Image 1: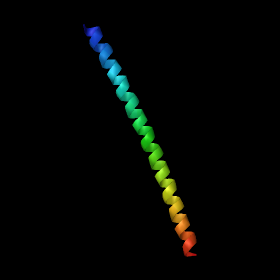
Image 2: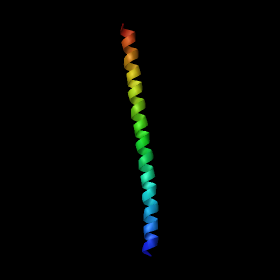
Image 3: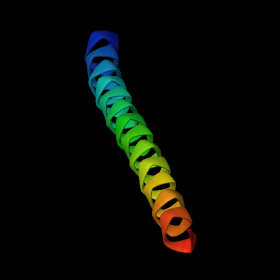
Length: 50
């Protein structure tokens, strides 16, 4: 009985860990892309002013 509970718990725990890792990677990629876009926008607007 306890073994079944532990197997089920570990299965859901592993699923949660995978979801958290995927969300963390997606967030890091999104932040990196936003920073690059903002840097390109600032540099493009600086070139336009000169």
